[in-house]
Amino acid sequence: MVRTCCVVSCNVRSHNRQENTLKKGLSFYSFPTWKQHQGAHVSAAVRRADIQFASISRYLLVCSRHFHSGKPAYEMDQTNPDWVPTLHMGHSEIRMSHSDCHRWRTQRQQQKALVGGKQQPHLQPQPRSLILKVTEDQRPTNDCVHCVQSRAEINRLLEENRKLKSLLDKAEMNENFLKGDTEKVKYYTGLTCFAIFMSVLDNVKAFLPASKKLSLDLPVQHLSYLFDVSHKILSSVFADTIDVLYARLGVLVHWPERHCLQATMPPQFTETFGNRVAIIVDCFEICTERPSNLKARAQMYSHYKGTHTMKYLIGITPQGAISFISKGWGGRASDKHITEQCGILNKLLPGDVVLTDRGFDIRDAVGMMCAEVKIPAFTRGFCQLDAKDIENTRAIAHLRIHVERVIGSLRNKFKMLHTTMPIRSLLPYQGEDVTFLDKIVQVCCVLVNMCPSVVVKPDTHETCSC
Image (cartoon, rainbow, N blue to C red; front, side, top):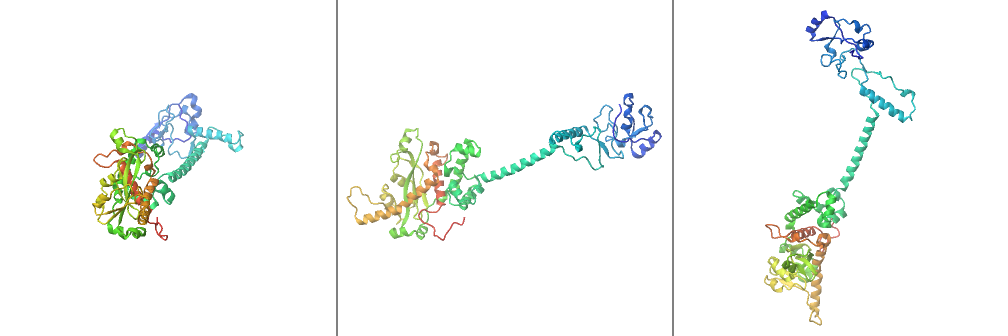
């Protein structure tokens, strides 16, 4: 079979073969066997019009320099690059490959469709034997329409991806989502400004990311959809976050030193009680699920609320900061019993004054600590109070109202305290004497302490630097 190509072969005489081989390390190969029906392709095969395969001399050879592998390929392997000599041919013309021809025909068909099927003079198809004339360091660079369209689609997708990434960054709930927007900070965290939020986050982020469920009490299933995590994982993350906040920030609910209290005593307290008021106390309740255990059910039923609750005793300083929060007690426990058993009496110093409501009959217990209780006067059994009792009752009620305002702020900032807590949140942790609900309440009190006081208002010229 004749190998057709568009290059000129290199020939040497047999009497020079050995000498050239020794000098250059070359090999020489004879022409393939001539086939009668292919004799017309001789000039096209070797680009030598004077060579006819019917009478090729056996001394006419082709050197190995013109083949990639150093020798010609098998005659029937027409797809092999060494089926014809191609290297060092002394010209730069190459024929279009089958793949190039197919691409060219596809491009021509698409061009016809673009011009409405009408052939344009400059778009007429070329013969199939088209020869591309290029230099040694140049190759065809015309891209097919498909490649152009693919690149355009890639660029469009990249631009779309950039825009979507920008929108995602704006919608992602992280510190950047809250930065510069005080209203968002208040809504999502209950804190008053971004600087306070970041101080809390910096304190705990090395252990766990801050949780936002506490403030808004969003349903766990909603958060699962929002953050694309399972219900179980989200509940575990929330519990771990509460543990970290309780461990890292729980000390921020503390009983201040007496000289600190006296140095910052608000005027409305000093006018009535001097600088002796140490704490204002009250109790609040959180609804729970109904226990299955009959004894626990009896201990947790609150006649005041008409349902099962956990009761907490809270104490605030005259400045409005929460300085004491007890562990949870069953809703049936009285205010007096909780006060005597929760440990708050051990913090009183001789001469301290405690402001309470009428339900706290703790004069004797507080008196044992050489302290004094101020309670509004009882009206039951009396037709009318004398002027002194009325004045004292009005003063106590006016100052004691601050603890109710703090409790209201606690509930409003953290709506979770309004919901019915599951029984599992009332079980004590292994190796600990506090429950999960106790930790939640403690963390809420810490975060309330980071907000402006409901008692002492900042001066008008003082503003938050955050």
